[in-house]
Image (tube, rainbow, N blue to C red; front, side, top):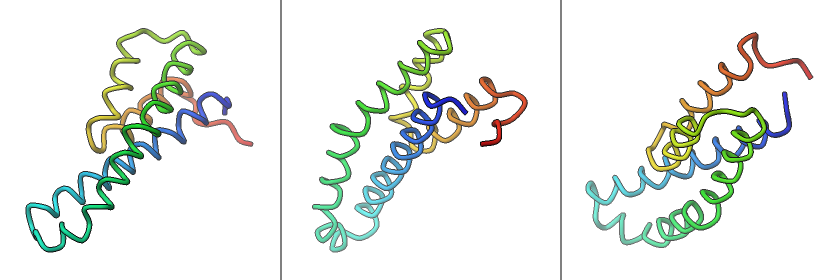
Length: 108
């Protein structure tokens, strides 16, 4: 597996996971307001971590992957959109893996 794809894959999982955690805690807001008062700091930390730190790194990894494998800009737009839609990052990573390595991931 190429180091560029490995970095993209890692950031895809990290960004997707933090986005799912963020949306799960925001869903708790509609269920239990007292629990929300205790988890408000957690939402702030995860939200800032995802939006300010992780997503820009994920954007750089996406751009790096597109440039290295000479993919089209429509794929880049889909990859960048995956950082905003919960769960989509995992699917896009799976589709990129099938596109770049159709025979499967090489053994280490």
